[in-house]
Length: 72
Image (tube, rainbow, N blue to C red; front, top):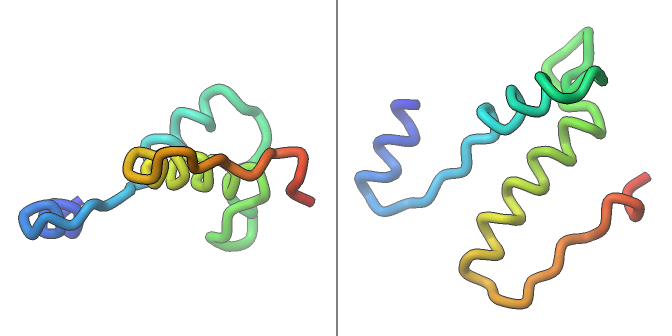
């Protein structure tokens, strides 16, 4: 959180996926992180992708996300 504060003070937008990942964890029984390391599972990566995409779409009108069905 301190890094996000420092970036904000300098006018840099920062996307923190933790709140979205924690909210999804409450709704979704599937794992968002691998059990043996800190990498996101495909479900966790989709949560972060949507969050980042939503942030990009705020400044890029007409930007369309890649559909979930397209990810393998």
